[in-house]
Image 1 (cartoon, rainbow, N blue to C red):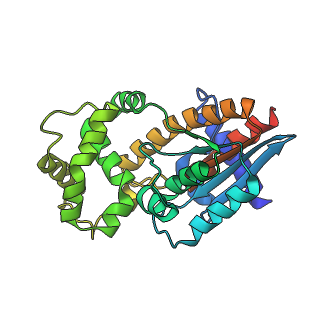
Image 2: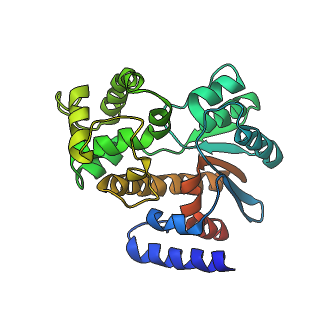
Length: 274
């Protein structure tokens, strides 16, 4: 009962803070108060219409128990369509290769291909997201928030030299997605300078504080940027779920656990309206 009451209070706060949004969600900064351990799994149903949300913790360990749990839930739910978070998610020849390369989202796509189930990316066009962010925040800060926030696990698991090998592909992603950068901003020395100016110390994977970018914290403006980006994405993703539910009865959603947590009020209303 306490959790339900807290959820209701958060939903009301979300509505007051973002009345322009079509789908009301819990503010990310308040989601930590739910103290929910990931994965967060929840099913929303009314009549034949069901949305099954698997809110995962991100892992690319093919031996992690979460992977087997995702497969068990997919087999038990028998989805008409699988929706997944993340751009550039591919399908490899094997289950383990798909998971190790593209994390649990890759596993969901691999399972869909193996079982001939329709699947669809939930992400909005990146160009619109970055145009939205650049109206509100400095470009160097957006770059820091995106690189550090989207690659936290890689940074924690790899060395500085390995990060440097990855960096050109990150810049190519920005170019492809429409984040407007100068030639200077595309260079690795500029990233290091921007990092040092923001954190007052050189970039070092061993000392990087992931809480400064993770969306459930409020330590820095980088948290705020990633929260703003996530809210923008949430509205598009929830609209896509809504649209899919109009033509499919059993909709499976593979998404990061923090999204799944804050979506609860929206999905409860969305499915109840069927």
